[in-house]
Amino acid sequence: MEETGLEVLLEELEMRYEYDATGRIAGTRNGGILPRFVLGRSREGCLWRFRVDLPAESLKAISRLAGREKGFPIETVGSPRPPERLVMIERLLSQNGVAARARREDVTRGGVSVAELWIID
Image (cartoon, rainbow, N blue to C red):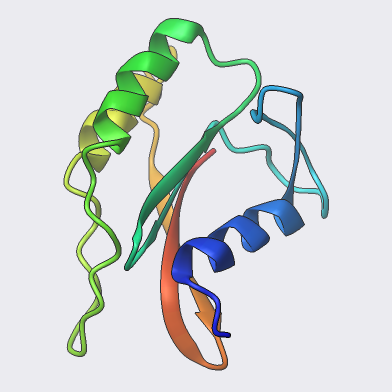
């Protein structure tokens, strides 16, 4: 049976990050920067994870925005559009006057794009 895009996203996140008991990102498995927020999109829908030290009020506001995002648009021409609410999420995660910027990573299986990650460090 073929994996869904959401299953692939969950596997990808488990390979990259360590989590605390509440499911928040507490460490990386391969070194590197610990992201403040990760939004994964697949055809079936979206999932997101937060870094362990983000304040509760930020979690609520960002979760409301992320929960309204559509799944990964499988397009045959050009690059996929960013999430509709990404700019608002970046604003909420900006700190001390430094703007938060997301970077996109494609998630593939067998050379086929099945999902994407939007990562804000």
